[in-house]
Length: 338
Image 1 (cartoon, rainbow, N blue to C red):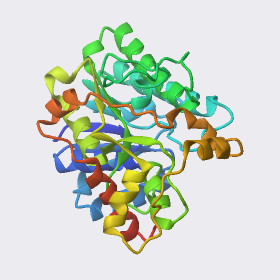
Image 2: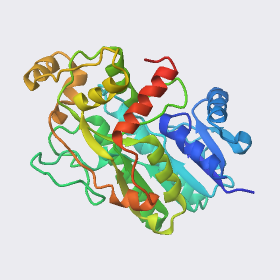
Image 3: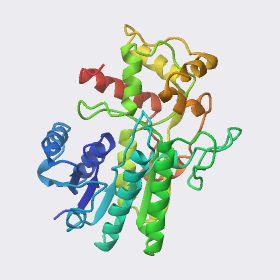
Image 4: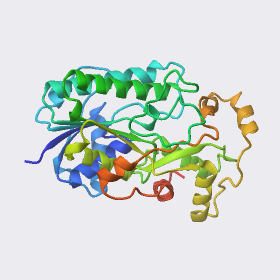
């Protein structure tokens, strides 16, 4: 019988790709969803993507409730904890993000430790590494870096990811199992959609394609392909020296206008923005739009990630950001979402 992996958040963009690669690698996947009513859609999506769904199981788990977690770990050798809130619109109450991120991590890791799960792979984020630092920094952010929660411009999402990952390491250290945890820290995730849910990062490409962005703000995006992130999750699960380590992942950093130019070459008939919005105009607009205001700290600030550890883990170069953005666009068009 193949090794069983508990995969939280299987219905998400990243979770679906992790499930696909695990199934293709021969693992039995037990995917968690908040409501088992989602199981049929996930099963159909993965089958359509070419997966053998005879090794696919489902359990209902809630990041904020204890029920079912211990039973979900029955017969599980590995845990892939990808479930965590991810938003573009920052909520008014930061605990809407922090509580499920931190408490979900606690439930997943404490139960995994109690049930003797061999290796845990946690999806964290660049948000836990590269924020709250002096903008004069021009060196890449690496595995040793942490977001400074007292730094200027740190938003609730970045706080939630930082607190959740720090809590994960605390739990594993307290259990004497530091080397049984591996953490993946992706930047903005693009790539092909598996279903008709555009998720979060894909909305950026969707808006560039549908003409709802008249001019591009001077905001850079550190980008990574979802297929690379999923492959890193699978590799980190069994690679002996991946334990006890963090793996920042960002292929390159491009500005919105560069993404628009990439898309225009493929879709010349679309109303894709040709101009970059002046910073003063973005600041003026931010006075009346909270979503823009929450991201003003990124205006013109280029961050690079040191992805060398992830490249070594995969044993190959990362998929170029331009390819990831085009793959996002192609799947949005295929699903008639743009």
